[in-house]
Length: 527
Image (tube, rainbow, N blue to C red; front, side, top):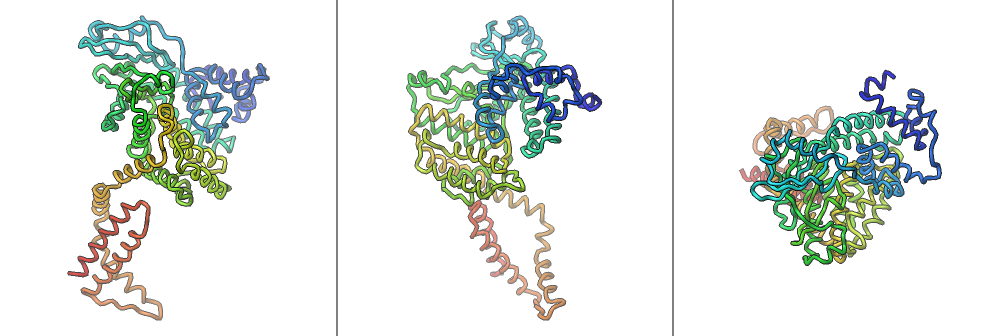
């Protein structure tokens, strides 16, 4: 028990989790995680209702384990690269819906955080609009007349989830030690990522900051609506934001009644999704249809900002290139990008993956959003890649699921939307913005300052290399001092600039650097 005492604070909860797993017929899982000998409790339990299909049994088990595991199951439903399709479909049925806690307690929490409720709000509705495992939402009106919603964190939930996350991380870590497949798919890393997301979601002040950042990032999108956050009324336990009304993005009947420009809304959905991912690396990562509404004015309303995905600049560039290669049917180039981004097993079937990529992207050309899309094709590639032993980062898989949901908005509103050309046009523009001459020159200048000593010594280093090339051999190259040495340097610059100019990816960067070197070479030659 020493191992558990050291890494798990709540042993009673740990035993409860193992007991539920045993009762639901997962004793084998407990043994595979090497927990059976240390906690023999599962041997006393008998599996119930063995006739229940395994995917349904997994969903039932997550529901019995409570809020943390329900959320984890929802995340697994976004990982078809590691979860079989029949399990994904069942886990998608998990609903984060629980009975509301008492209105008296809700008022008490508000007053603890903000002061007397009558001084803060003109009115406050005791009946919540919705209740979930982490928080519930009430309508209210401020004294200035603004309609708002008040999101209130469920009492005691932070400590409960913290303990469950500790146990989940421990089980993932042990699992990697004893099940090689879990190590291959970076199970512990994925659980840690989920843990960080969930902890962020518990902090409503952080959720408010997420909403504000996303609102600023998409400020130029007139058809995207992100509610205003009342930061002076927002704390770790309370979030007050603008009340917005709309129709759920998957409610086809209600959407048909709205008089909106369907094609433009579909285009906005795709463009906003690409800006979040390719340009900003800061994207809405909780892609449930209930988090996206359409207003009467035809605006896409984003809700619930607890889960935000983040991508590095390198990953965003690679993602953008992959999207362009897919839209241009460039199989070899797409394959190269996938290998750069992924974790490749030693015995990975790369030729098989190449065939999969070719099959997927050739289906895209001239397709409508209803028939096929680049995002769906790339999402399918991540699944097929995992089967071939090539594992994409979990953040990219979740990103793909998020973008599929955003595309689903466009599909519901305007199925005839021509996807491929629009996708290619938007992605090219975003990559150009990311690699504009101004930004590249700024990066070039930073590198120049950081390597100023190397640049200053470059002529002497070239001379030294040329002088030493003749030593110890039959042929000696003699280089005179003076202008000829600078000519050699100019020749070197011209050759390297030619190399840059002949490269195609990323084109703008290569062209700029090559042009700069030609200018420098010309200056040296003409001195």
